[in-house]
Length: 417
Image 1 (spheres, rainbow, N blue to C red):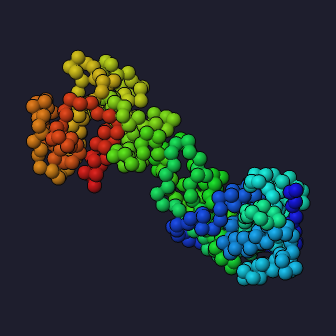
Image 2 (tube, rainbow, N blue to C red):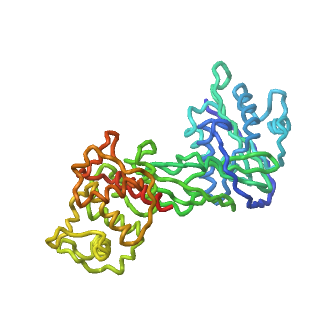
Image 3 (spheres, rainbow, N blue to C red):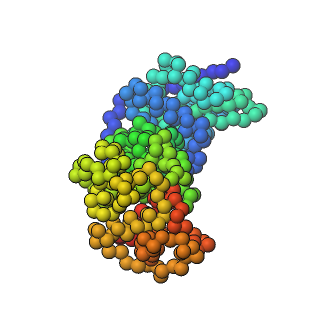
């Protein structure tokens, strides 16, 4: 039979919280508590938030005390210990400072955390205890065969007058995929006070200015009880994994605003790059003010389209030319040699000086490079903007994918630094 016993002592406490410096630290959840125990902390904090109370941090030293008590509860579900002393003597044993506001909640024979939580929050007396003026919490869940109770929970809460220091753990190189829940990161706030170190996992409500549709690097803030921590979160496209050769280039070009995805978290890495797409990316790369280019010089480029001002800009500066019949053919896939010509034209027209970093290559398919593209191909190859394949081919007539063009602009930008 499931039984539930709890104990609470009341006093009034004033909370003072101080802001301190942020230090990047590593933290492993399992070093402090089990996954079920962290989940229970999340449930309790959600309940406290809904009722206008501060969120609790899991105090490392309390975990030891809770584990001792939970093992005792396996044998006897009571606030009295095996030596007949009351539960709070375990805090003395563990050298934990406490006062009369401290609480212990115990339970036995619940099959899972969800059932235990529902019973605890559904009880008026127990929910009142969880909403008391405590600051830190410890949670232990143990199971063992052959005991009077097959499982036991112990929650101990204590007060603290202030946090003396704080930091954000696991804040380096954070990646999530589009549509992945923000709560799945390992971000954790670590606090320090007279009781020692305490932790709280970062959840979505603690992060400001997060937009799940904003691909690439997001500069965000974690806010917790007056503390503010800045960090970067990278939202990856579903078709651009960190292990792919083009990943760095796609991320870089996204962060720079040269490229945008196609929506729903897709970059379309293997998709063909059209001429209008390429010139648009070049215009963004060049930081063109599109308000200056409201007309169109080509019969097949309608003014007012997302690409039209960039094409008009490139046309006015002779960076691109049409087909001699008044058309630009923007929807046509761009070839590798066409890319070279447009980049070469851009550097000449805007007097962009880039030093050579490679000797001129002798491509095995050089006979396929058009006369009008020869010097441009050599320019891009010797500057490190483009290169051939591992067979020594340049493949001038091959069309380029979006990920390949991202790599071109990634290389191009590096040449300018």
